[in-house]
Figure 1 (cartoon, rainbow, N blue to C red):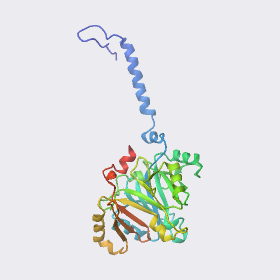
Figure 2 (cartoon, helix red, strand yellow):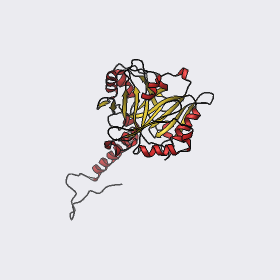
Figure 3 (cartoon, rainbow, N blue to C red):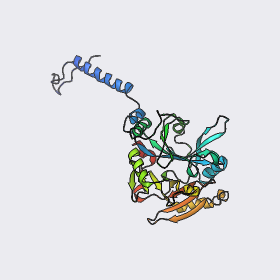
Figure 4 (cartoon, helix red, strand yellow):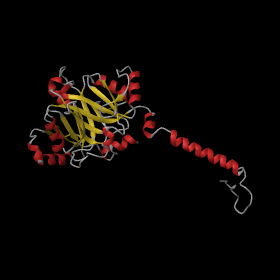
Length: 333
C-alpha cells in the first residue's frame, strides 16, 4: 500500500518538507515497530512499580495467637462482622492460620498455638507492613545494617515477604502482595457489610524505648513522628504506627495485651457500640467491650478484647482523614 503525499488545500503541490510517499512509509513503519516493541517488551505494571524506590505503603496486618480457633472465629466473624478470606493448613489438614479480612490489603491473622509456645509478648505473633517492592526493601534494610534474610521468597500465601526483628524484639513482616496469591485471588471478596470497620487506623506495640524506635522506624521505613511522638505517620498513607511505653522496667503480660493492639477506624463509634451490644452474640462474649470513652479532641473510642485478651480498639478518624481516599486507592496512586 502506498501513501499519497498530503497536499495543500486548493493546491496540487505536496506539503513542503514532508518528502516522498516512500519516506513517509518508512517513518510510519518505524513508528509501528516502536509501538510494537513497547507493547511486547515493556515490563508489566507490577514490575514497573517494583522499579521505583522501595517504601512501606501501609499497615498490612496484626497477627495474634489464639488458643481456640473456632471461638476466635465466632468472635471476629459473628460478633465483629468480619469474614475469613482464606487459611493456611498444617500437614494433617488442621488450620494453622486463619486470615480475617478487613479490606483487600489489611487483615487480622489468627495463629493457632498454645501459650507455652508463644514467640512474642502478649500473644502477638507479628505486625505486618505492606511494601511496593519487597526485594528493594530487603536491600535497603541490609544497607542500613539491619539483619535480613539472604533473599526474598514467596510465603505460604503466595506473596513476597520476609521478617525482621525490631529493637524491642517484635517480629515485623514486610509483605508485597502479588496478583496470583491467596490475597490477590480473593480481591473484592469476603468484605460483608456487617464488619464493624473497613480500614486500620493504626497498629500499636509496647516498645522498650521510644527513642530507639523513632530512629529505627524512621531510618528503616521513613516513618515520621506525630505530635508527642506516641504515633508515627507512614508517608503517603493514612495508616499510622503507635509506640506504647510503660514506666515499669518489666511490664507484665497483661500490659502487652493492652499496648499491643490493632485500632480500626469508624466514623460513628457510639453507633457501632450500640449495634454490638444489641447483637445476640454479645451474650457469648460478655466481657468483650471493656471500655468506651471520649478523647479530648472529641473522638469516641471503644476498647474490645477477644477470648484470648487480644485488644481491638476502634476510633473515629480525624477531620483531616475522614474524607480521605480508601487505603486501596491511596496505595495504588
